[in-house]
Image 1: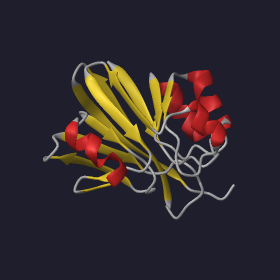
Image 2: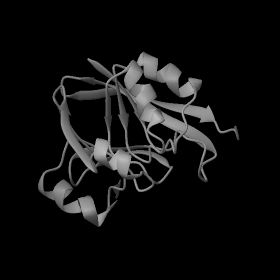
Image 3: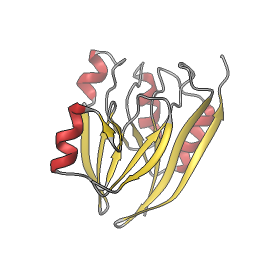
Length: 166
């Protein structure tokens, strides 16, 4: 069993609330808009990290992380990208890959809106963890945590954190 912390849209922000949940995870997955790479450096000091770059990320982030990250976690095939859309309204840049070779779990960020939805057409689970950072229109900072046990995705939890101007 692997405990996953999923976050996105940190926009150069990391605090003790995020770090607390990182310490409880086995792996951390970041769905882009990292901002300053001190964010991912801090995560990597504590746990293994899988990440993608987002539209606000600079050339350093784009050299360290891919646009799309496809991998297996135990028996679950995962695809992470930053701008992906959601079931019925996927981004054209990722649509062909999803249609031709759908993963079991598709993750994106970008919208700052937490959403978990099963796509009955592609037979995949879509997750967007919302935004963990303080920059953006969102009123509550959010992340997701869940477990992968063999081929099962289970124990999904929404983490909500107050959004304060620091």
